[in-house]
Image (cartoon, rainbow, N blue to C red; front, side):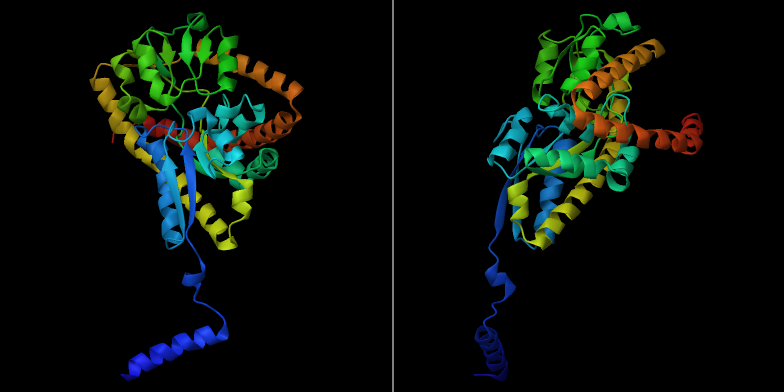
Length: 360
């Protein structure tokens, strides 16, 4: 037997004699399932969960595996929170405002009409009271939250007819993403409906809907909405900077060793940053292609925006009256937003306004 074999064997025997086994022997692979609210075809928003799972796997050196399941595979799009609460899956990737009907305050974890843009949302969540207040709220549903992406300001959707003034919304059957904006649309006279992303095209094609909003040029083009609706409006005043979230079952989270909890947080942060960057990278080319395909890209008129703002404020006031959780979180959000608007007016808004008029 050569000297290297002797040293190797005595090293192993020494470890065994000490009663301490190498870490790799003592740690079985932890396997979780994650239910997404999004179809695979929307690869950027659905892909946020895949980015998250890949980072968890890499940073844990394979000790922690999370399988990602598209909408409908293990839970319906709007049933993923129930699946997490019930233990069917350990985690989900979703937009919190989908669960407004469970409790109005869910919407504040993502986007409300005339709310934050993406940067302001990050600031409130990371350095304001946003994450603290929302995690206190989510604790009542036995879930822990992490930021899981942002789309940036979305488009205002696809319409079979032009929307020139608020009265054009009356009787309009429109797909919107969540109960809160649905309440605002109803105040404007529209007939809102929440459909999963994978069902929107057929609803427009069959005449079951007169309009539908989804996300923005990249995702909307992939789903083919321009083939059935000629008018594409902006901005999506109900989604200035919607945060997508990871919800983790609290029991499963607390059962993890401390280092894996840290890995979850780090992987979520990387997936969060990646999503917005991908949208900003992909949307310009998609918008150009939609215009080349004869899509009519139009801005909502001032009168429509004003009417939507007024209706939104009425819904928010009603929520203040019926929900102390909403009232507490919403008040903090608006206080923070006032300061953000003041700051952005001096630098970001002026810079963006100037640059949008330049030819580079």
